[in-house]
Image (cartoon, rainbow, N blue to C red; front, side, top):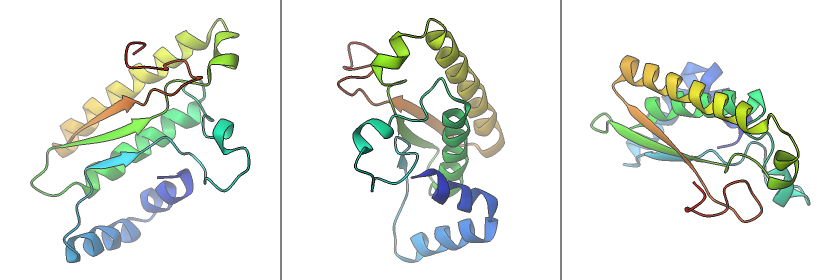
Length: 145
């Protein structure tokens, strides 16, 4: 779910309620979100731009936090767990060249974990975020995770 769609739903509770009602009326359930894309996939440079913002940038943390809040609201009433996939920290080349990148990404993921814990306390919904390995990224395989 791209940033603009997520922000619309976060900032307009009526839109979020309408989406949930439409899903319910069609017998559809949302239990996972793809948090990898931040913007649309229409660009010629999608392969590299899809990795921005990465986990060294505050916008990635904010976007993933928004997605967790949305997923908690969209989960079926009888569901207590949901998942979000996200990018594997960053595209390797700029990340490896920045000595503070690992520390910054680790701090962002720690903050995310704290926010997810608080969200679970508030909503009773446990949201897990998984890094999606990708060739050319900091986490290329499950063994790297």
